Length: 298
Image (tube, rainbow, N blue to C red; front, top):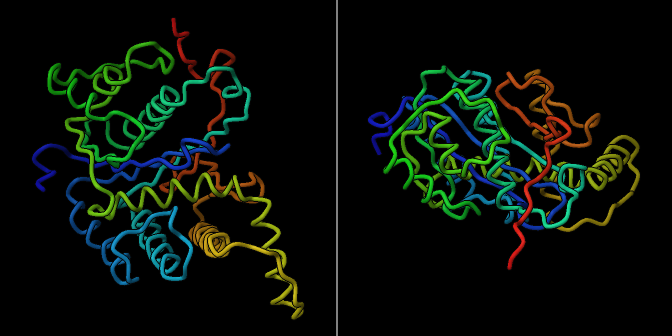
């Protein structure tokens, strides 16, 4: 795949918990196109060396999935600290004032969240002249093919729109407000970097969903290790493995001074979005920032 022929920069995107859970998330992994192949090889090795063909957050229930997750995190943090890539995760609470409304349109809201994330990453964290090749997971809830159709028919027109709440269709907004040259939906199993986005989207939302359970587990682990107490919190295999991954990511972020909070925010949250591992808990931008609603039928 000659991504350099289309773009200067690459973005892989995925979403997690977008259909039913209180906290939902999207993640985008971004980097210069010239680094695409070595980055892809690095993450592929993380997955294959763990005995997996594909890593998926939803399937994290056993040690080998955990080993893959830890290797992915270690590689991702190393690349981020080395200024080779960024990982940005946007998380939203469907029970906050913005989302707790009747007839909420979750697909339209997901579109809006992608727009927020793209504006804060593609425009603000990379050079303004960057030209993007976007790889979303083909199982996304969004119709990326429609956005690509618009790109093909209308061409690229860059605008300086700063209004995040206008009513233009998503395909037009994305096409005109960002220099996205091409969109290609990908199969996660064949794209290791898409699996990285899956991991960080999953752990971002899950860190809020399971925060109380995690802290109970952590305190019993610390008691057991420090004084030898035989204290157990009944957890599923999935919880046990995921909590170990959360603990590792938290320790990595602290070690590299990435300013990613956890306890104070009751989930992963980066306090300076300029840092290359950025967990962003969405807050309404102003009083009129409400989730979109479905139109009345009939």
